[in-house]
Structures are given as C-alpha cells and as structure tokens.
Image 1 (cartoon, rainbow, N blue to C red):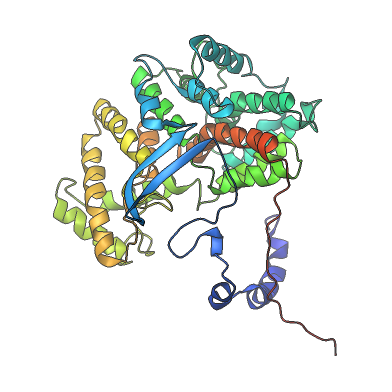
Image 2 (cartoon, helix red, strand yellow):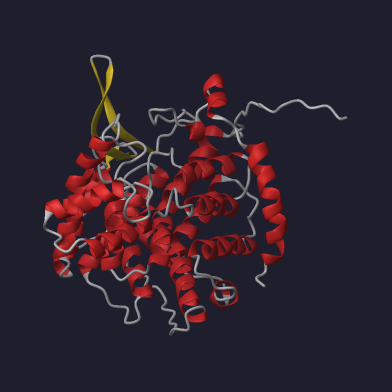
Length: 446
C-alpha cells in the first residue's frame, strides 16, 4: 500500500461533501460583479497593482475603441525585441537583461561584467548540499525537488528574516546563480536513483554564461555548440518576465507583502509555476505534436494537417478536449512577440539539427490553426501561437528531458520574481489583502 493509500477510502467518503458545499454558481459571480480568476468575460485582468518592471501591449486605442494589435513586450521601457537584437554576435544576454530587470538600468560593460562575475562566483552550494539534500528523496518532479532545496538553503542564511534591501538583493542574486544547479542536479539524481541510469555531476565553469553552464552541466560530455547555447539564452531571456500579471509573479508579490523571507516567497512562486495551467504548457504541446506525427503522414500537406487539426478541435482526436495547444494567450491578441522573436532562432536550430520536416509541420500548424479556431469559436481578440508552441520543440532539439522543461522556465523567471520582490519591498510596503464576499447560507442549530 502506498503511503497515502490509507486515506483513500476516507477521501472518497468526503469528496461529495466538498462538491456540495464548495460549489459556487456562475450566477452569483455575475450578481456580485466578481470575476473568476481575476479576469472578466473578455479576458481583461482586474488591476491589482502598479509596476515599472515590464509591460505587455496587445491592444491600442483607435477613435476611443480598443483594437487588437501586434503584441509587444517591454522590459524596463525597452522593447524586448530590440534588447535581443542588440546582443553582439558571439555573446549571450541573460546576465545583461537580468541586471536591467532587477535594477532598472541597462548596465555598462563594466557593470555587466561585474554582475557576470558575481553570478559565476555564486554558483556553488553549501558543503555536501548536493549529496545530503538534492540526492536524497529524489523525484521525477524536479520543481518539487528545487522547492525543497530552496527552503533548505534558507537554513544556511544568517540573515534569513531580514527584509533590508541589501540582504534581499544578496539572497535573490544567490538564487539566480544556483537555480541551474538545483534543476540539473535534481534531474541527475532522479535519472540515477529512480531510473537506474548513470549519474554525473559537473561543476559549472565561471567563465561561461548561464545558458552555456546549463548545457555543460546537463550533458555527459559537457559539449555544446554556440548556436545551441545562443538559442537557449534567447529562450531564457524571453521567459524572464511577463508583465507582472501572471500567477507566479503575483504569488511572489503577495508573499513578499506579508513580510515573509525571500526563500519562502520564491518557493511559493515555484509552487505556482509548476501548475499545468501556468508553467507546463509546452509539455502539453509536445504531447500533441507527437500525436499529430503519428496520424499525419505528410507534414508538408496542408490539407492533411488541417484535417487532423479539425479533428482535434472537434474533440475527436488527441486528448478529446478540443484544444490546439500552443495557440492563443490570455493577454495577447494578434501575436505573441516572444513567439515572433523566437521563431527565427528555432528555424536556425532546426536546420542545424536536420529537423526541417518537423519545422515544416510546426509552420503549417502555426498558419492553419488560427483560421480553424476562428471558424469554430467566437474569437473576441484574435488567436495566434504563443511562445510555448516552440519552446518544447527547442528543448527537444537540445536534448533536454521533459522533466526539465518547467524548471528551465523557473531558471529564467527567478529574475522576474526577484525584480518584483524588490519592487514590492521598495515601492509598496503594504500587505496585499484581497476581499472575498461571503455567499454562504446562514443555518441554525436544531
């Protein structure tokens, strides 16, 4: 009997009570003007705060009307497309953009080098931490493994309970440094202890970028090409931050506002990100693509591809939910700028890896799916591929196992979380206390 199986009969007994007493009907939400998930029927979010860190543009005002437009993503006032285009050939941008997001200004070359060296020197874990923490109770769920490691790191911090700005900056920089190690070492532990495969623990190289070290630590031979590291670097930059209104960033700010410590705030954000409605979307895209490959013989035949996509939309294929994963976004309308930026790098990597046929399939789905979805459903703001449509494909081409897809998201997003924690401490300094209206029935004891 599994550890939790002793509770199974009890849980089944109580679940009907939960359904009966915890269900709240839609008409009550409408009656009181409350938006489920803080989103109205048009997908607009309830305003819960102000930020200087990032911005998403998906609509523009024309003649007093809100009109869908091509998506744009801004980091600290700079268009992310421009930031990526300005990275010199042969260089990587993770550290430079991390400086911008966390501290608000683009660094000089000297400042960028200083942060690069600071992060490099921070890529070490406490003595025996890898053995005693990461390798014990290994798990296929690397996000849980990382979260356990984050909370354990708190016990090594003499300034754990300090919310002074300098201490929080130190803590955030340390986590940005070690996140790749927590993720990759957690995977190696799982791969060895749970899958009975060989294990190797490579030390990061202080001369290399975050993306390069990720590939170095993951691969048995520690080898990678510049193009591989470059595409991964771009993926990390594009996933660093996203407007402040996403679930895990809001979680960071809520926990921070209570006065809790950095490790608890980031652990809470990790727990939010691992949810399949948030950080695991690219895995669902990969599962769908595997299914499409099984049922479509000619990837270049748009009619054949379109016919199978229609079956997926009708709930007659794949998982029966009627969704084409990787299409559409809660905020963007005509396009996701991250996908637009990323696609050019994906095409280069596909050519280098001999995956042109797969790229043809992805491109056909990208062009066909929005039209098919628009025919079948009422679309109020347009539908387009999002960044998750391609990210899983890239990780697959890089030989990154699916267990690390969401952890790689976290390795990028820890920068955005850190920026929002700092802004919450400096600019808000007030606990977030949302309001809930009680709709319970008053009862009397008999």
